[in-house]
Length: 192
Ligand SMILES: Nc1ncnc2c1ncn2[C@@H]1O[C@H](COP(=O)(O)OP(=O)(O)OP(=O)(O)O)[C@@H](O)[C@H]1O
Ligand SMILES: [Mg+2]
Image 1 (spheres, rainbow, N blue to C red):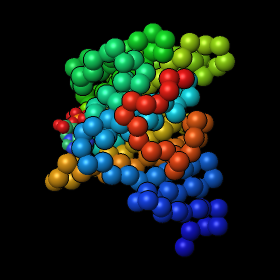
Image 2: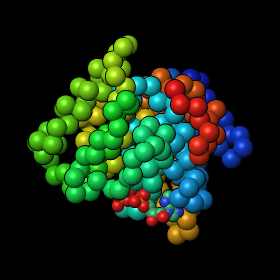
Image 3: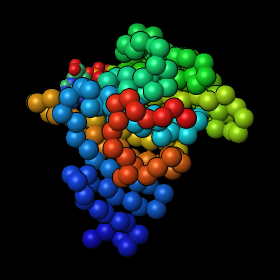
Image 4: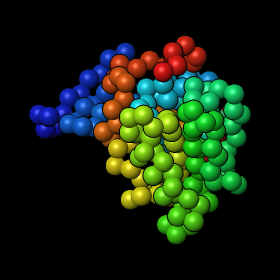
C-alpha cells in the first residue's frame, strides 16, 4: 500500500506518481525522433540553472534526449556525444553544458574537469537577473552525491525493438508545468 501522501494516476498510457516534492512519470518512445522530442519538451519547461541527470546503459538514448534539449536551447549547435571531451558547452544566452561522465573514474577526476565550476554557474544562473545556464549529464551515477539536490532525472531503458522506456523523476525542480501535463513537442514550444 502507498502512504496517503502518494497520488498515483494512470491516464492515456502515462503512469504518474506524486509524492510530496517528487513527481515521476513513465513514458515509452518508439523512435529516436520521439526521444529527442521529449528532450526538447523538457528543456522548454526547465527553469534557468536547471540540471537534467541521465541514467541508462550504452545506447539507451541519453545523447538522443540531449540532442532534443540542444534543439530548444541552442538550435544552431550540432551535437555529438562528448565522450572524449567530457564536457561540451553550447551557446551563450542561454549557455548549455552537455556532460558525459562515462570515462570518469573518481570524484577527483570530476573536480579536475571543472565540475564545481559548472555547479556554481548553474547556482548563480538560478538567481534573478543572471544569464541563463542549463546542464545535462550522461552517466550521472558517476557523480553520485555530487549532483544538485534539485534535479530532473531521466532513467532510460532500451529494449530489443526501437522502443525505449523513460522514467522522468522531478526532484524539486520548479518546472513550468507538472510532468504529468506534458506531451512531447518536436519544435513548437515557444522559446521562453
Ligand atoms: N526510441 C529510441 N530513442 C532513442 N534512440 C533510439 C530509439 N530507438 C532506437 N534508437 C537508437 O539507439 C541509439 C541511441 O544512441 P545514444 O547515443 O543516444 O545512446 P546513449 O545512451 O547516449 O549511449 P552512450 O552511453 O554510449 O552515450 C541510436 O543509435 C538510436 O538511433
Ligand atoms: Mg551518449
